[in-house]
Length: 142
Image (cartoon, rainbow, N blue to C red; front, top):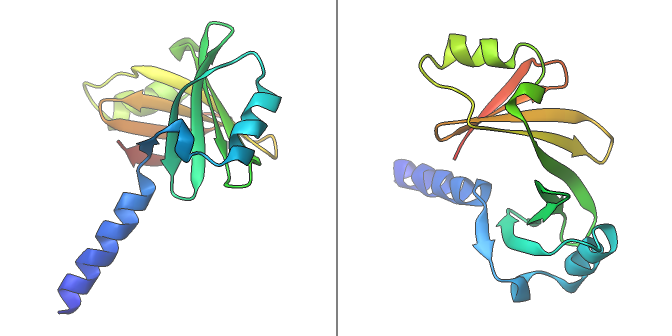
């Protein structure tokens, strides 16, 4: 019985950590208004729900971007796609050492509301997160 309960809790936690595509009509009005106010020249290509938060994916200035809002419309973080060559030193060495035979497919710069910058390097089915100096922080499986 304990095993079943643990499996159910694990399944619930796992389901909350993955983004779920949602319809624009399911996004709170305050979130949509906050997006339009911050990015008036952009149109949302896709909305996703990440736990209690809402992510808008869009293109701006020929760059793929996203912004994560809480349910009240406050920005949590922004993400902008960058060239792989713009990743901090050490990222490619980390990938070569720890993910032999893999290479970075896409890269992004993430900035939170405090101005803290992290980087995301996507390899096959995995997002690797690094600090602003290229030090590995964590792995997120897609």
